[in-house]
Length: 135
Image (cartoon, rainbow, N blue to C red; front, side):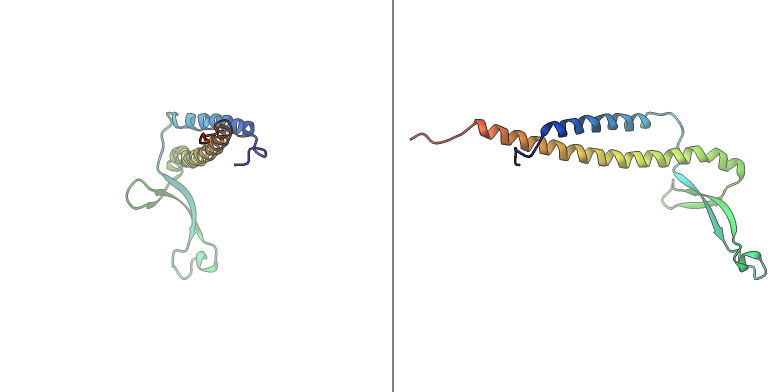
């Protein structure tokens, strides 16, 4: 690593920012709100009846729950009260999945930054120690 072009203080500041971001992300995992492993979706489909409006392109709209708790996702229609009850837990689950992905990115960035700082310090250390053979 060329020490003349590298400023370690920038990486030290970046590490500090990344560490504070990790703290904020981890706080979200300590919440007590219930989660539901699944998602709510609006789907549009045809019923198959030849004289129905969906045959002319006006598809039937339905809200479904995609339940991912088992080995295979299960899809079922949800009613209004059920939708309202499941909306917050499914959204919170998705947010935590996103935060977990961000946590992975932050950890990788921290490791890259630490590696640069190590390389800089190794280069600085080699300037002070010259292990030449004595004649």
